Image 1 (cartoon, rainbow, N blue to C red):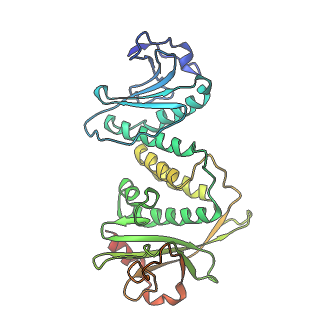
Image 2 (image 1 turned 90 degrees about the vertical axis):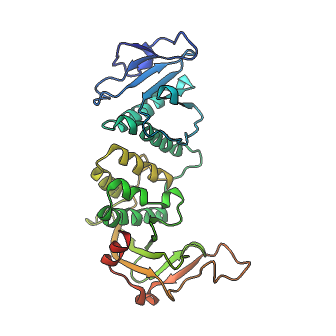
Image 3 (image 1 turned 90 degrees about the horizontal axis):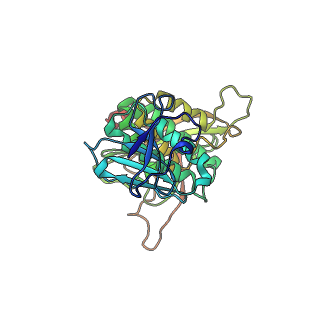
Length: 329
């Protein structure tokens, strides 16, 4: 790379000349205002004149990570030079690329050199999910489900594990078997309406499967729609912000936002009109004769079963918080 003087131009690529070699970039170090940690991050321009962001990283713990695909961006991971190169293929989208680039630059401040690569790719994965043409804002039912999982993450997982470990145990957004997985202990998180409706929905005959060595809990949160003037009302965005403020590591923030992206939540969407109040929370342990349909007792030939459980019939299976916390550890 050929390094040039740092610039403060809004689109820094405008003052960078094209590289003279097809396999190289002309670059400028990202300035202190956006890069206060002084990381080796560069604005660049390719031989063809395409704007680029180049990020140098450490290789002590290098392992393959899936690079997302974009319509107008291309991402190269040059292991031999420990550099991640993000290149805009359509110069007419510089304003969008500048937003993406700054988001990545800001997300890796304060990280060790060895953590930079993974954090940058997490941000790219989030942007890839955001730009899907079929993406839609979360429905009210999806918001309720996410709120319940965030409450469990905040009140239980963070109590037992470090923030990074707790986020890793949140498996639902990553298509895990359960919403939360703690070794041989699993937690399915459910939301329901008010106490007058004790039913929860089970999405398949496999959701409440477990073997003799496993423990499975249901964490059920009562969430009701609320009027805007209710002082106790909150939005899903309120809860996301509350958790994000508490996260210490920039890498954990990137991981949290990637998981949110996996379930379809993005800060850019407006949820201010969807307000909720919390009611009672109940914990049940699925054991013994707990009422359920499993893949073992479902008749042959029947599949993709959805059914409801009346929790008023499950009082013998109530568990307390200490029991759940003990099983998680």
